[in-house]
Image 1 (cartoon, rainbow, N blue to C red):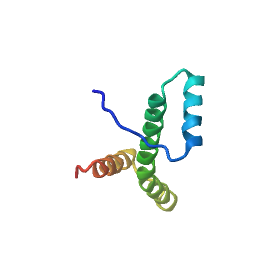
Image 2 (cartoon, rainbow, N blue to C red; image 1 turned 60 degrees about the vertical axis):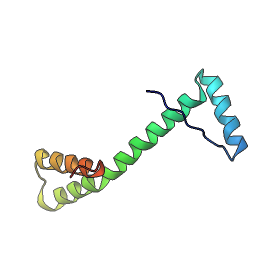
Image 3 (spheres, helix red, strand yellow; image 1 turned 60 degrees about the horizontal axis):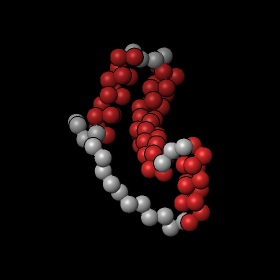
Image 4 (cartoon, rainbow, N blue to C red; image 1 turned 90 degrees about the vertical axis):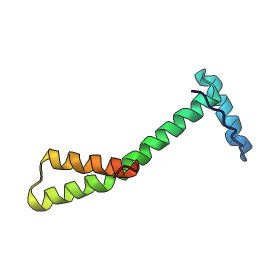
Amino acid sequence: MSRRMTVVFHDEELYTNLKVAAVRRRLSASEIIAQAITEWLESREDAELTPVIKAARAEYKTSGGRSWKKVHEEAKQAIAKRNGKR
């Protein structure tokens, strides 16, 4: 499904750079913006899992580790919490 959205660039140079990049890559500006948003959302997802990973590393250093099953379950819970599914 295709949706429309208007983006207002308050920085004329940013808009110009986007248009030039689009021409150079033979993409539309909307494709570049969609890619950038996708990458940003994925980086946020990774950032939300960082505390779980850090806790696993800390526990490994102090107690010699824990099973992958336990770490995997905690990661699934963190993702569910982020998605609003508790």
